[in-house]
Length: 269
Ligand SMILES: NC(=O)c1ccc[n+]([C@@H]2O[C@H](COP(=O)([O-])OP(=O)(O)OC[C@H]3O[C@@H](n4cnc5c(N)ncnc54)[C@H](O)[C@@H]3O)[C@@H](O)[C@H]2O)c1
Image (cartoon, rainbow, N blue to C red; front, side, top):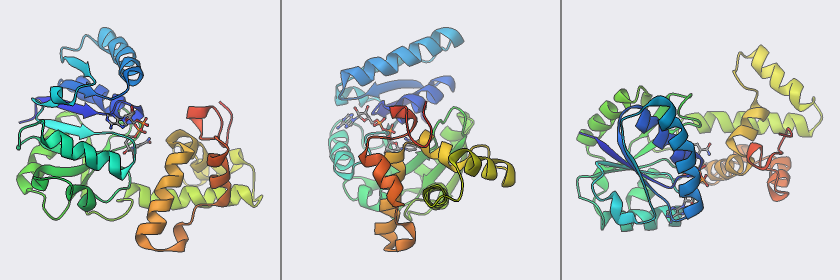
């Protein structure tokens, strides 16, 4: 049974996933190599904890060994296969062999990541959306060696968090990003070739297709660098040019326009 959850990496996703765990009453240990990231997360979470009188506890650390007593560790490190694989090797030396280890990767193959673990049967993909406090879906990503008991335990854990989970197989982009990113890419092509302005393209999809956010504002929200890296992985892993990123997206990312996080993307913030 999961009672204590370790979160590795407390950037955008790690700190938000920590928040949803605390709200559901799970004790949390947050690990990151950067002190500045730990103090940013602490500032955000302390404010929330004081406002809501939560009873669950939270610890912050830059020492991986303090994740030792966690029943579940959710890896939310930078989207880089080497960083993640090295972390899995190191964490296995610092936790019990029954500890469940999950990755929040948006696009890296779960089978490939599983191959860096000594006990891959307790490893799986848990793809939370951004922000998990509002978007309740979690994609549970299967792989060849996964133990079905782990799947059952994780489903119960997500139920307590009031998240809605679906299972999916290890295919590039899983479900949400595989469908969403080609749409965002097409919206960028529409903008690039002058079909309309950004606001009209977003309004078209919001009103015409009943989407809560338009594709360009959503791209800014996700981060244009993240959108670009997911499209590149879809193109490479499917070996299909239909996923080729729009040149304008490449240009924006090269120019440091990454969306909300840099205060400029398709819109200014
Ligand atoms: N941004 C999104 O919308 C989104 C949505 C779903 C999933 N994801 C996935 O979540 C993961 C994290 O994404 P993010 O947007 O939070 O990234 P981020 O850059 O905001 O955070 C990454 C964190 O990892 C830490 N880190 C990097 N290397 C480390 C190491 N070796 N040891 C310990 N800490 C380390 C960094 O200091 C940073 O705090 C990625 O795999 C991403 O694909 C992102």
